[in-house]
Image 1 (cartoon, rainbow, N blue to C red):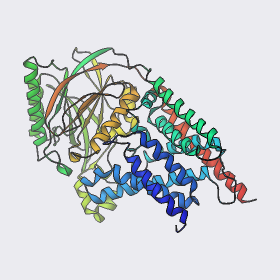
Image 2: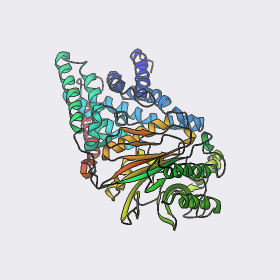
Image 3: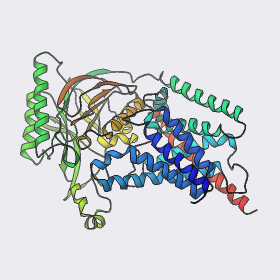
Image 4: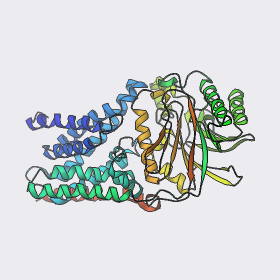
Length: 516
């Protein structure tokens, strides 16, 4: 890596990574993401070889992830650095693959893929790498997709049509077209790149015309944010504190309803960790919830840890709790590796005893997030539910809606990340889920961000952070599905397959020419 060219390219790769981080909360400066992608595209194309391009991609990834994922350091520095290292490897792979498409080995013609196809082929490779990143290893970590930075842009109109993978594709397409326009016959290429950008944003604007899900009725829903006293592992406070906080805030909500300040809710939502003990086993937690339900006179959807299904195992659960007890439950499906469960537990725990703070091994649920309960009129009601980390997995929320969910609730506990960008990043991802499904999403957390997101992904209500709060919102009931849910999900697979095809063609051409 002593090549003078590499020394000149490295600062640009690092700078592009830092620039890209500004597109995500808390800054949210989305236009810079196109510049960052264009710079990375140009840098890896100019690399002397695939290995150098991989190092430049890794450098971009390290600068980007060290900044964007800095909130993980609040839990533990070693976990922060490990997460950054793993996620940055994907950018190393991305750099190598983009170089393979844009440039051949020395001595070969200027490009393997026809020049005009380099931008779309490269954009398809972005989708391919993000698709793998979101699934592997240990279930994946698709937290920083290009598509998640565009919810406040005209491109948001594309979400209900092609989802976040499709938005990733168009962001990468614009960036790579800009980089491509700086080579060859520049005036003509500049016009083509400009036309691509105009077309992409026009398509996004047209997508805003996709109507919101048609309402078949409304529900009045109470929400309770209990507030949390700390941060880090013990952000929700001491034993029983979070349950008492949510019960007290529920009492305040009921008092405001009885005073006529707020409409009477059809049900009330407590977040993930609305209580910190399994109410099916702990009599104190059981009494706290049961008394709150009795006082409110309506069911409470409450998030809580539960023991089992086996010895040394646990689950994160949402209960629909009525005066008669639990009517239905949902068990969280997407679990945080090394936060809720330990991969290779028997091997790693003796070597890394600090992992013992994870506690019992969390076991994922197996059913879509739909609670089938009795509505306020006694007729069946399907309440969609996702828990915290699950919002980063589009299939989880999409499956809840295709399984019949009429309203969507997200319960979360982000108390350990109070004061960090993690909270706003997760809320932005949830806004993308709302835009994809054209459904309102009510987010209820222990300490922030609690809020109501409308059908276009816009923030309709946001509660203050770090304090106890409560209120009532109106949610539309619907069974409509957007084009994305009716088959648009296949766009990710089609684009990823296009990336694979471009790479296969590039490598096949290299082998043929290399043997001549």
